[in-house]
Amino acid sequence: MRHHNAAMAGFLCCFVACCAFQSQAATPFRRTEKSTSELLQSAPGNGEAIIWHLYHSGFALKTAHHLLIFDYWPGNHVPADKKGLAAGLIDPNEIKGEDVIVFISHEHDDHFYRDCIEWKDKVKTIRYVVSPEVSRADKRFASQEDSIISIAPNKTANIKDIQVKTLRSTDSGVAFLVKTDGLTIYHSGDHACWNWNNDPNMESRFATELLKPLEGEDIDIAMHVCDPRLKTSGWGGIGAFTQKYKPRMVAPMHLMGKYKETQEIESFLKSINSPSSFWAIQGRGDCVIYQREKKG
Image (cartoon, rainbow, N blue to C red; front, side, top):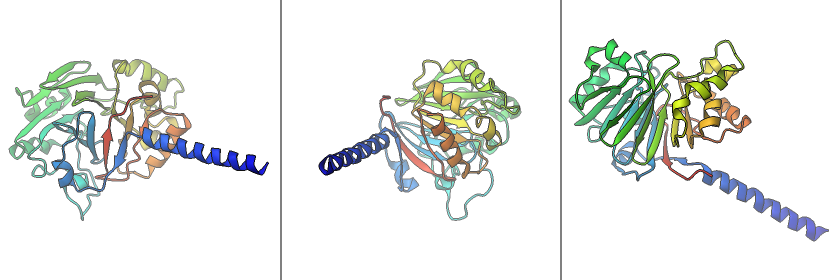
């Protein structure tokens, strides 16, 4: 019996260790302590990206050939001891050597930093992809050939080696689905399940009807609204989104600096058996490296 128990204990230990290894291996991203200069000088491969969380709904992604910036807004509580991407800020001098594409989903101040138009004076190669609302709100962002591209909702555009599909937002503007360098990237803008009345059917309708343009897409990296004001009604639809569209990695946004909430969001996603790996963002300038893996 003692031998049987010892063998069983050994088996269980191996099983648990194996499960832990498989779980760890299944996570397609890892944190990095490398400096921003090292990361910007590195060259991600096809299907890889270095991702910085900026603030609120802002992200920067360095892919094999581009630096994609989504919904940048410097916001509040700027760190005094850090600068640039490490502080969740865009310094045009830091990125002047990159091929930069700036995405602006709509005209709300917390998604649209108007002075970003001035980056073109320092960044050699830069383009802006904006919703029509942005162009109307600030004429400097009106369409200009090869420089500013305005894309209406539910349209697809090819910008050199980048394909951009837009979804009509449930609030203002658009959400973006971007394909480049072997990656499919989704940024929701303010396209979310704004379930203020706690309607039990609203999340399902949001996922099946309002996200329908995402059907058939193999999403690598998704940045989705997780507004803390909606925690009792699904956090803005992130659960329904991940369950139906199964992005490999999902990052929360629209947090307004409330990073402690990411632990609650992660617990919520685990409770519904979400298939996506969750990036529990720790603060401004938090950085991870993503590497595409095959879905199981």
